Length: 159
Image (cartoon, rainbow, N blue to C red):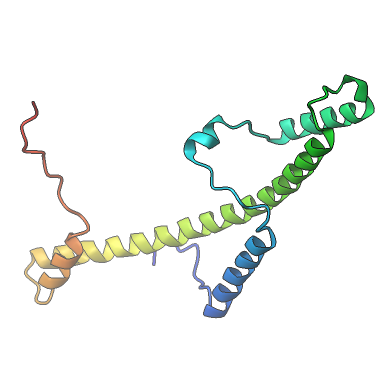
């Protein structure tokens, strides 16, 4: 525990099971929509929509419906409107899940930081006790120091 303890709580097994079940239920509810697993390259090269683009697309579809004589014969406005609505609905889901994810990340960072700080305090105490030849510290120190290997220079000759 840090001297500046900001969080001191836990997630019960019941809460964890409920949250996992709710997340799985949400995923199952959207199973017909969440069907893609894009590669990094596909994600990079794909057209993307945000707030401004979403508004532009919505207005464009509205104009296309009001002025059908300007719509190219190869453009399916009904399908475009369907895609737009799906994108808008998913964007709303995205915004809500982003808020949840940010809250989870923030709490995880605070709790993790405090736990890591406590571990470092203990490790440094054990390290000091080991240097002072305090009995019972050798095995603990040897086990924990494996997480902090010294930088080893590459001894291979580069050609």
